[in-house]
Length: 131
Figure 1 (cartoon, rainbow, N blue to C red):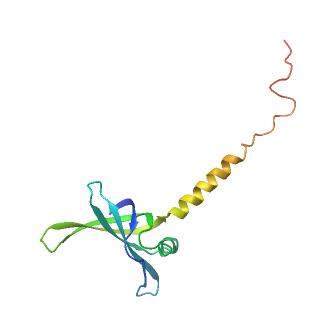
Figure 2 (cartoon, one colour):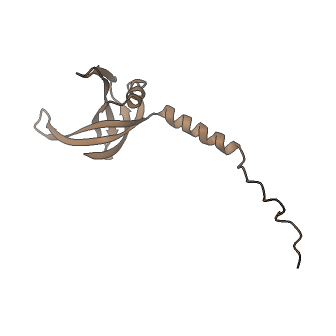
Figure 3 (cartoon, one colour):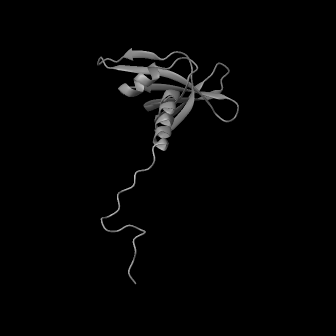
């Protein structure tokens, strides 16, 4: 498996399902640009609560980035051409909401001046120094 970060747009609706043990999980499909003018589809599955919630909040066509374990395989299309199959088990999901919230937090930190520690008692940089 490869540890990957994939950015793209959600393709179709996110599906929430329940496993044999009763634990919920989410499946989604992301279309990512491959740099050669074609899009690659990545099948995404998420088990963690935070990743599932983030994916469920998205709709068809929303931008997102997912990171996790990527497995690569192949499949054969109707014309007999071998095509790549990409499956990612998402551990983390980043959405435009997360980016906006982070930018606001950084901007808020820049508005407050940096705090300096008070000078030690009896010493200030402009004190008269005996020669």
